[in-house]
Length: 271
Image (cartoon, rainbow, N blue to C red):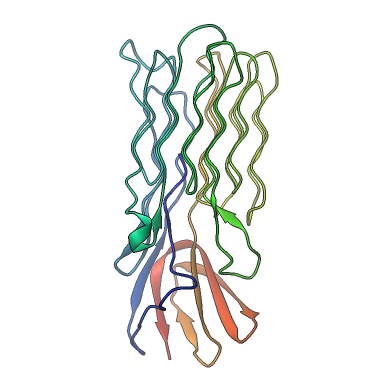
């Protein structure tokens, strides 16, 4: 599942105090694995605002109980035996938050798994046991940085045959053992990669996207989730100071400045 998205672009701006340190953490994406566990992404944080990391997907091989997809900012997709997708934990759009559930999975036939939830739509459930795996939910389009990107697309489900594509917004495509793998999600700051016969596709870095499901056999790995991002847009009459420990770039967009923080933990201060 993709990470949650929180934004108030176009709404009432945050009121910040000059010469005050505000803590920022850019969360890492969940790591694809062959272990019988679900791996969630890390949270991204600005002061008291948290974008919750994406929920890990589940797998046919995980255990005899075939657990559901994990809860997260958006939920991970279900893997087999009629397993549910994970729930969306991100607070609702009333508070600026966006996330959706992972898809429900069907166990039979070509074992198509469900897609992970995206910030704008839920992960897709396969239509029947012999059809294409579920696509990842689409991300949310927010033009805060002047590029009109989509953010936090869900990862595509895997299959013995036709895997699911990732959601728009940098998700990774699902892997396929013998058929067509799913395409990575574009229209993002960094596009997700397609799956293959050995791994699910990786989500694009700094998109909050979900990784693609790993194909059979059980030695194949799921794709890595995309890391988070924190983007601040403010009047160009203000100056930002970024502490050590954070990776940041600043660009002009009209009469505003946009600072994009892509890694690390630290503080920022305005003057």
